[in-house]
Picture 1 (cartoon, rainbow, N blue to C red):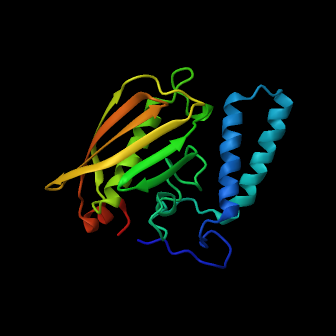
Picture 2: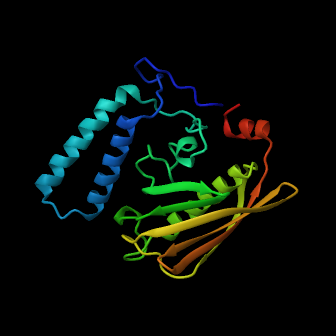
Length: 218
């Protein structure tokens, strides 16, 4: 089901292409999320901040459906940020997504970013579950660019060393081949020159109609 935005309209059923205002909102929420984890503010300041966030939620409530099938499908273009605009891993318009810059060069996915306290697992380190989800997304992107988008079957992750927070990270992913319905991909994360994690994934080509029936999108 393609993403069919509307240009005008108001209310819960009116959807719009994400633009700079939506990006600004997502960036502000990322900032508030990090601050909420780290703040040493007084209870009075926290209460005032909570009231402001609640007011923002009340403002958006009339235009927000209770639930609908997840976006994105695809926006035009080859930029991963454009066809996954609301991804919880790389979506520029999803405030829970870490601030990564993603590009594809010669079929290899490259991502760079610096993760803050909202993604902390072991003290000072990126949570292992976040690392797994980033691998899942980036390996999937590599497959899409190879023309074989598929569903995740298994991810084998080796955590080689702690992945530090507040450090410039480099992530790479590549499509490795196809065998029947199985699609193979792999990737790594580095902090500087240090390898912190690597992953091998097996993805499965799924019939689109069957997937739609099982996911409620048919």
